[in-house]
Image: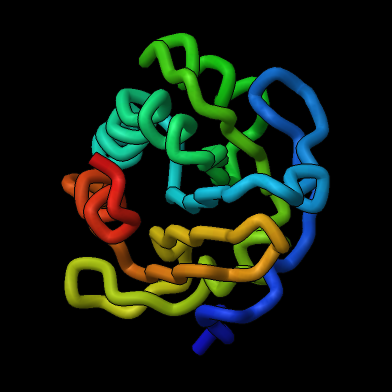
Length: 156
């Protein structure tokens, strides 16, 4: 089983390429709260639903002081198509070698339709202004996750 992060852990720092080809470094966001979510693949039904939910909630999340970053193993060009196709307004990051997924415990053995496989574990992390994990959620559902996360964070 992959090591998982827990509340109070230091969030592993990273630099990843975004859907706009910019470099995004987690430690550059110190002083802000960050919602970092990992999803299996751009332009698939569940991942599209989750990304659209985050995008639709982005104004209220930002209003509450949160920046939202979505991470997948997709190449930046595919992420740009995903953003454009679905009018997404959040930042999408490419982790092609899965190093950041592994650092966060978001890649490993999981059950898929009753069969054990190795793959991306749909996960969400809330990182505080000091760079520590405030909330770590693994095996989240694509549908309804953003609404539940907003409730957990006390955001209307």
